Length: 78
Image: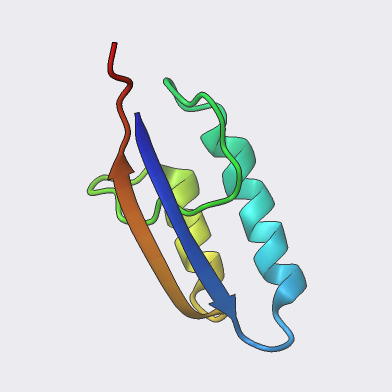
């Protein structure tokens, strides 16, 4: 299982625009094969991102002030 956690700080006055972009990317990501659950955390560093991630990046270019994303691999030991 891959877990991605992070935070995004948006520019003042862009909250609604950022939320709209987050909702769109969350809905599209939930349709991806293997997606078990998606609470809005970003998956912005994919090498070959799907179209909805590219759209999310573009939508947030003027919104995002800063971001911090961490990728972790989780496993269950029998």
